[in-house]
Amino acid sequence: DTGVSQDPRHKITKRGQNVTFRCDPISEHNRLYWYRQTLGQGPEFLTYFQNEAQLEKSRLLSDRFSAERPKGSFSTLEIQRTEQGDSAMYLCASSLVTWGSDTQYFGPGTRLTVL
Amino acid sequence: DAKTTQPPSMDCAEGRAANLPCNHSTISGNEYVYWYRQIHSQGPQYIIHGLKNNETNEMASLIITEDRKSSTLILPHATLRDTAVYYCIVRVAPGEETSGSRLTFGEGTQLTVNP
Image 1 (tube, one colour):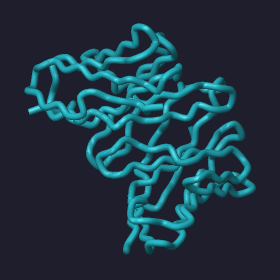
Image 2 (tube, each protein chain N blue to C red):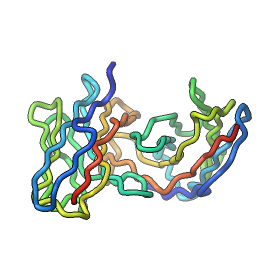
Image 3 (cartoon, rainbow over the protein chains, first blue to last red):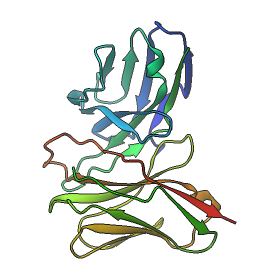
């Protein structure tokens, strides 16, 4: 069990550029989540997948954001036309849903800085 | 999900027990109490969760009051590496979600373990 991994760990981009982040969940975990965390705040939910189906999206996920999990394994989060307000830590988590349990395990995060 | 209230900060001496309180007076019968912690610039780390009974694992103990309106996370022998923000989160079990499977983080308690 290697845990949840995220790539890259840090990304610096200029305003208006597109960026893509990757998350590899714990093997055989069927749910995958994306959260965003700004400085001094707790993580905020963005979206989640069960297998390859995207089941819920937060209002925080504007139309510039898109997430995919094409084969029910890894996931990507793309931000188009980045803005300075997108600067944050983007966290991925995964879980194996069983009756009565859905414990989410987080990756190390991708820190995005938009200049 | 029910709202939680935690003190913004606490201090603890190294080697002593750290007792972190959480109030969740509006908790429903099908909602679990989860605890996570986040060490600076890392992803949140799962600690423990429970429904009604007290729980213990290798990291901590969780004491839930009989009326379930509050809980206490106990780190029995705090070390400097336990310095982190601790989040208490209440959420429904999988299969009973009305608003998805998200974790709703508050501002947590900054625990500082002093030498």
